[in-house]
Amino acid sequence: MIDIPFNFEPDLQDSEFEKLGRLTLRWAHIDHVIGNCLKRLLRLSDEDAIKVIFPMPEERRMTTINELAPERRLKKDAIIALEALNWVLPGIRMVRNNVIHTVMFQDKDGNHYFELRSKRRKLSKEQVFAVEELTNFAAHAVLSFRFALGLKSRVVARHALPGRPAVPECLRAYFQANNPGRKAQRAARRGSSRGSRQV
Image 1 (cartoon, rainbow, N blue to C red):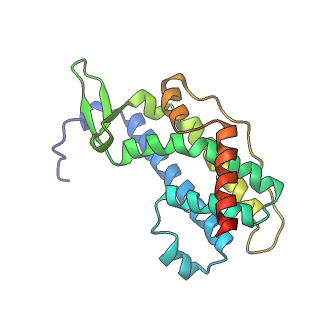
Image 2: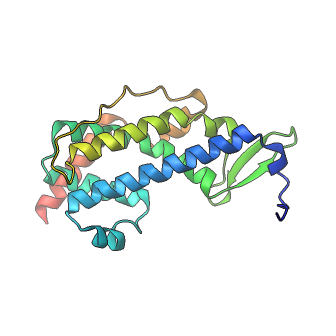
């Protein structure tokens, strides 16, 4: 096997590589199920969804879902799950982007961090690993939303939504910056739905 020339790899433990891989796969599956939720809301075939939905970034998929939701008369379970997704995804998105689209550096004390140059943002390994519980919650929330939208088999099924986890202290500033209060979210939704009715 060809050796890798980057100097950060020998300093990462196998358990850290494993956790990064686990988080990355979970984020990918969450994005995939979000795509399937949008496909369901738009009533698209698998082939059309591959062309229209799956090239979209996750943030655009969620924006479209939130634009469609007021018109679709969602069940209570779907509304609750969508609110949970809107609460948790912005914080996860920030961490995910800071892992997937960054490079790893080492500071003068020998600590590794992920740096996203385009945003001038750095996250430590501890901050990245602290998002695991929020990621797990997002996985349940997106499955709950998907089940509430109905399945192809027409079998009525539910996926229970666990309680919201606490936001780790090391991520709170990032999380709050991406999560306006509920009143602001409701006002924004009312404004967008009024605008769509006027057009």
